[in-house]
Length: 157
Image (cartoon, rainbow, N blue to C red; front, side, top):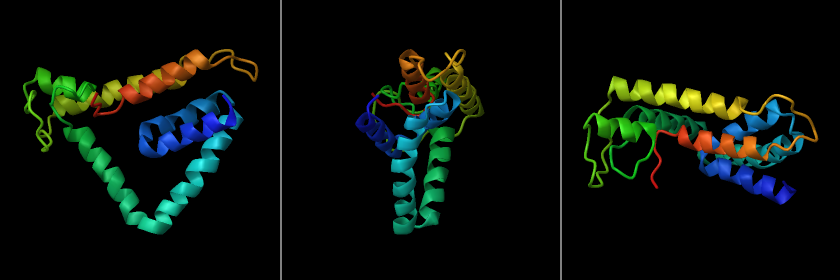
């Protein structure tokens, strides 16, 4: 990847936190240019966000993500594991958009957490064997990006 691609990918991490797992993917494969570009973009913008909006807002954002993981939506376009499990258990409205989250369900939450863990580990570890500076990691990178996106508790698409 060229430097501008790395910078744009780092910017995407600010909008889709799951993509931030790609920095762990890069560190595991010793992709230091990738890691450096990520740090050069995310660190200053993260510090700016803390300075501008305060630490409390950062923790509120994490709490909101935790809430979404525990509740999600049942709405049919939500193609995440949580959405599929909510629909399978007939929790919430499936065909009409409802701005309210569905009630907490331990089975949906457990299924979401387990599937997310499996997807994240798959993304991080797939193709790790035989890494080196000359190794072509494109397939591993694409699989990791797909896995990290699929691990999200809400995917509207």
